[in-house]
Image (cartoon, rainbow over all chains, first blue to last red; front, side, top):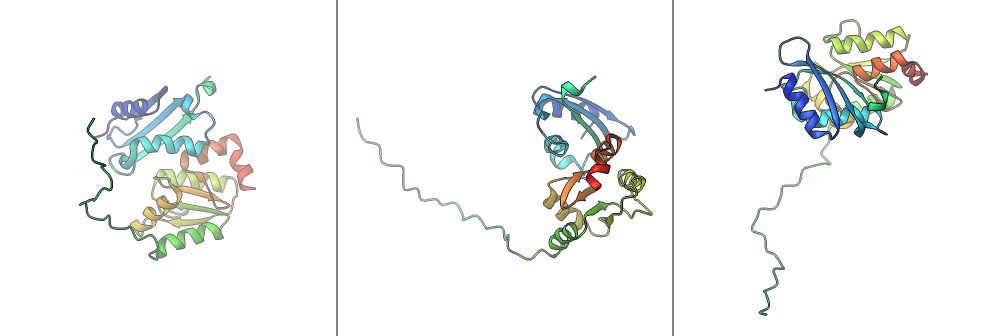
Length: 79
Length: 125
């Protein structure tokens, strides 16, 4: 069972100091859009940042979570 | 102080783990690795560039076409093993996946971000 609030909670719990905005953009409970801001992303490539988030959600990606549009950023890049 | 018996050597009664055969031929994985090596720009997607079967794949194709970038495309849908083996190679769980010069550039979100910032045009040069 995945919903936006649960995904947000999992990401924020697993990546220290992170902030996640998660939206269920179809309302169907399986397509999500997430923006994750974390100091832990500093020095990582985009690929590595996304892998970190995918790693938190594990097998749910492609399982309960059919689609996850992902944007990652470090706090310094936040306007 | 009475001396404790040495706990070693341990004799395990657990069954030996069955080794995972890593040297077994894996033609699908080899074909994917070869395709990545042979094509400078290659997109693994759902559907085809003319008929993408997923919005993420469609957006990635659109961005490559907007840059007039020639690319090879592989449809992962006909055989679930293509996707499994690809993700095992790339350590990336989702489709599409864009490779340039043998390196994973990213999925749809990263590719679109790089298109908007001009980095994708640079990477494709």
